[in-house]
Image 1: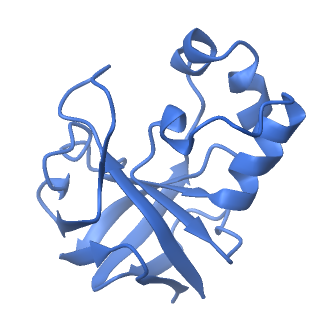
Image 2: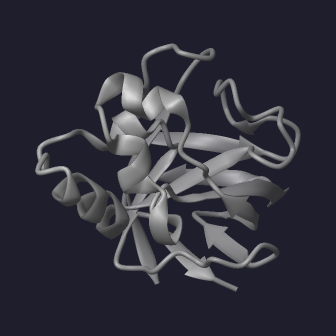
Amino acid sequence: MGIVLDIARRAKSRAPMEVISQCAISVEAGVERDSRGLSRKRQVTILAQSDWQAATGELGRPDLPWTIRRANFLVADIVLPRISGTKLALGSAILEVTGQTDPCDRMDEQVPGLKAALTPDWRGGITCRVIRAGTVKIGDSLTLL
């Protein structure tokens, strides 16, 4: 079982990430007021703290904030599944893994080399679609179903 360390969203593409303490997740729109939520395969993105630390450590930049990755949730104490179709309970929501969050060129725009550091072993996190709506707050659990 993992734990939610932090939550973030962005109002539109390329907008700064807004860190929040809780959110609603819906089947229709993913994370409330997040621009990616309408994409059925990428409604929610989750990043493992250990993967982020591995990537930033490889760059010699352990001080980089996780929000540079532009994911919705930062979680700890769990190895994220690397199989599409895996179901997860996040807070009171149920999600299905649709794939890995492929690092894009935006990563290198922010920090040169970050895209390559996030590429191995799904370090960039996972993408999910919402199966059941719910709410998530910092400190909630992430459980594989």
